[in-house]
Length: 230
Ligand SMILES: [Ca+2]
Ligand SMILES: [Ca+2]
Ligand SMILES: [Ca+2]
Ligand SMILES: [Ca+2]
Picture 1 (cartoon, rainbow, N blue to C red):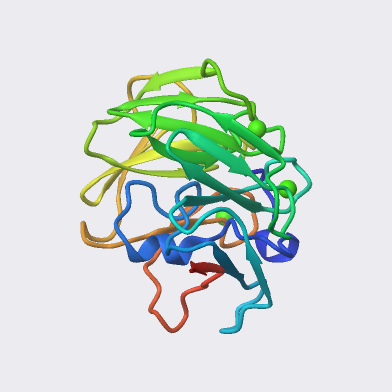
Picture 2 (cartoon, protein in one colour):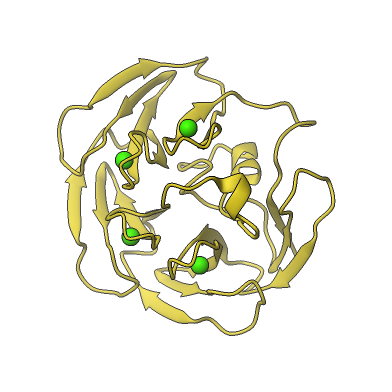
């Protein structure tokens, strides 16, 4: 995702869907990962209130759901996954998909980010410890293939150095291996944060452009930006 002040831009940003994903220890948490919950209805909240101000229906109840800025207009919208087929919407209106692509394998784990800094989010799939990044909303070959971390690592996506490119962090217990490059091998930075049982959130909390790990908020202050149900 392109560096921006989320609180200001996001009029309809379901991307900071941090909350729902953080409730379940899915492989990819928070930014760049899967939207939690189930069902085909999305309850979007543009503000820090407990009431959804927008409800849309998109996809099928059994789909996996993601959010991103697929067309680079500054607004995050949903995508749903059915096996290895992804349906993208550029509107927060539900209805038909704007693009449908097949990418990777049904068993792959999926990450969303802006890998080339053009303002458009695209997919990466992870198979074992290998990441297959694509810069296009098209099927076919990956733009970059990188082996990073270990198969059992958890993965977070963010722009850790504010250069406009999202890259992965892999987590092993309470240790985080940060890379700012799309290269196999050593981490750029290794840090220990919190406890192994924590569920940190990723975001640009101060609006300076760089994403950081945030503390696990209490349920009462957790920014529940999007949820879904049948
Ligand atoms: Ca958009
Ligand atoms: Ca991009
Ligand atoms: Ca970066
Ligand atoms: Ca920041």
